[in-house]
Image 1 (cartoon, rainbow, N blue to C red):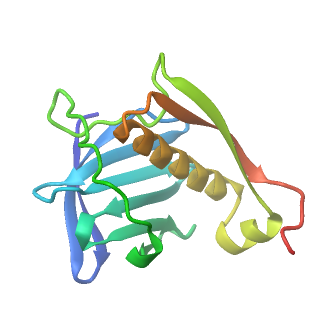
Image 2: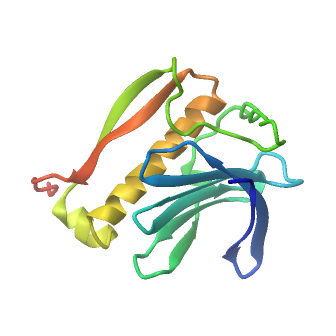
Length: 174
């Protein structure tokens, strides 16, 4: 599939238009990456899996947003508090694809070092934050896609694979 132009309504006064490119992802996920035209230091990452959508929109100095599926066909958009993010150096520019898009591999490429990641949560976390296990696994897949985007942008020839995501039988109380 070719590039997809999408408008993302973050809040009543903040709508961005981006050209998204489908990226390599786990077999049961659809991963789209892109940037906002004419706005440097921006990125968009959307991951769809098992009917759920999660993602991030980074608008550089204009803000950071997370998109969280509510399990009922709606998304919650949250603006990230910039004070909660430590300072960092300027990002490495994204590589251009043959069609001019900012293409990223969100799974390890052949020849890269790959490492497996297991993400676990308690029954309490499942009940409080996810509609079901499939929603939790979709959220975990979005975190792995973002991690792999960060690794690639940092020119690190390694990538994470989601080995397992699910509820663990333990009490997360203190």
